Image 1 (cartoon, rainbow, N blue to C red):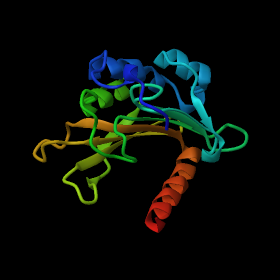
Image 2: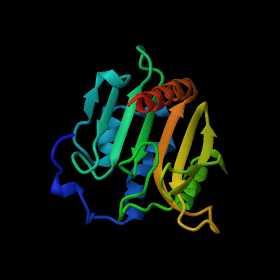
Image 3: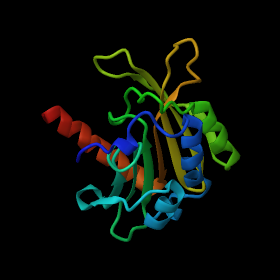
Image 4: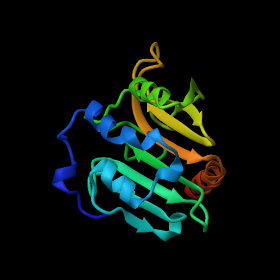
Length: 192
């Protein structure tokens, strides 16, 4: 992973709202708009790391390369199936959101809807094994792509509000491949 960079750990030089405003332009288009230049310019970062073992995954690590983990990936040799993700938590796929990074899920949903994404209904979550952490997922679609926003809610009486844990945007073909990858990760963890 590499040593932590004091520049990218709490306290952060932005509010959660300001962080969302920096990320939100990624969701104006489709996954096909995503490449190294677009991501660096939008997020104001340096080059992304590359890991060919993960379907051509380019990434920034939280606390090392940037404030949160951000990645984009190509799921096929032609580089046509792609996706992008942001993790506000160090635990995959969901976990407690880091202090200072609580981007309200309703702010995200409102932005996505204003950009033409439809849906936003709760898809069902649960509790993280061995913890009291409770989460859910909102799903959106637009022009052959999907967005899933996983979030933690801190009050079971108000499950529509909470902190985003991760945001994943995929084209539909990549969505099928991501499911295969998630299954492989889960199976690998069970074997450990």
